[in-house]
Image (tube, rainbow, N blue to C red; front, side, top):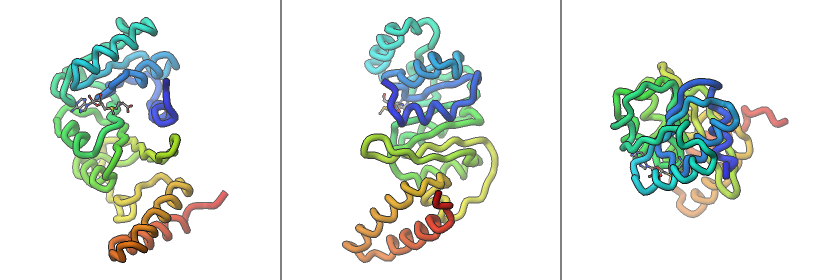
Length: 208
Ligand SMILES: C[S@@+](CC[C@H](N)C(=O)[O-])C[C@H]1O[C@@H](n2cnc3c(N)ncnc32)[C@H](O)[C@@H]1O
């Protein structure tokens, strides 16, 4: 039920804080957080009534339908309570940006976007959120980047905006290989720059 990706997100959640899972879909993550005693103060929301109907069935299976409130909401529009942490995972950066364009977002955010991490990091930086922890994990065939943000200012280098702060050597080697292949076909100077940045990131990661 809980994939490696969802477990990695759950591992970032501080214990006993209040959490809202925006775009919960199946509600697997809230169920896991509750069952593992990470927090019992968790609500789940989704934009789709149909999705929430099936989330409710899942909650009922684990007798958690009275413990985990389900809220029908486009992003934070109908979220009236203040939460310590919001999780926004499994969506694209465009949707995540629109969800975060709300004055009531919590000071701690755990975000896993499926694409355009450069745009995501740039946007969160412009909202005055700083990266507290970033990880890249491989789940089946895909790498996922999960970023924990905390309210606060930081200056990010171009390298950090493009490729983050995960320090995952395998992930950076995967990206290097990907951009080398793209560059070999396109000879686009942008990819040569990516290659050089990735080489310099890789050089700095201790090889253990
Ligand atoms: C691919 S699922 C991801 C589910 C889960 N968060 C995960 O990471 O496995 C995306 C979910 O986000 C919901 N969603 C999309 N846009 C949304 C929005 N603006 N506000 C709330 N939920 C949204 C969709 O209905 C869908 O259930």
